[in-house]
Length: 374
Image (cartoon, rainbow, N blue to C red; front, side, top):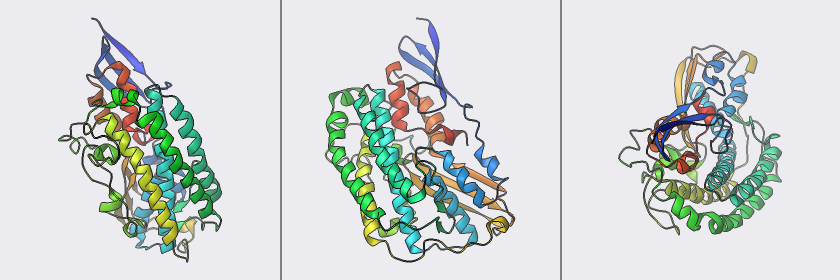
């Protein structure tokens, strides 16, 4: 048969955002795939060189919209390394709670998007609605629902209201109950088994070489999680497990590294995040929530360089920040997980895939286009 060229995206329900995949198709089999970006034109890294140190906080959160807080945390941690700061204990626990709430919200979006890609449309209706309850928490804590601009160098912007833990616990209880319905409709659904098992499989021997991180790497059997291996915030004082293949709890273990396993990892990590938040609320000490800053308009960060990394729902985010002792960073480089997952990994997995599986492979990798165009 003649080979056809197809373009999926940038405005397409089967794409994870403003990006496009150029596909070459023989019949219903993809013979070649190329990721095509350039629809966002963001250039965050270069923009950060022309902004004051604190002015970059509202900018970095836009590098990954579904989970913006990880960028605020990684950038702030790099600046704190340059300053030689140890943030207050209360700030460490609040950061942990914020990051885990953001992780749950991002996983709900990822699960809903994936379910829609295989035709189970009830789940995206549920998950996006349930995610809104977490956004309600962020609105009360930060004044914003999406871009929070809350985690700053030295701590957090302001303290947690006394009434918020009660709302957080109520929301966690609700989501915990909802997970049972998610299992019934998606994760224990024959459609999910037939469509996902063995599809988009990352060879475990190639995962590290390809730059895979986060849930996608843990689905290949690697128990790698920055929160455990290089703890930040209050993670070193909280008990939780690294969920990886083949430890999938009540779910059946099939093949490592496929779409099925990747989505189960995300489902199970929601439960881990709920446990982390509850422990953090219980253990959170009193005290200051932020260090006293110098004048932000005249704040000069000592000369040097620092690298800080965090574990996001999409994988490892790392920030390399260079200072010459001036009012602005000389260089900021972001190591985002979607750059490798969306280009290197996706292009390899799509080759030889059935065209009906293209969207579910992309959604199972949980790609965030702004991270690619940073």
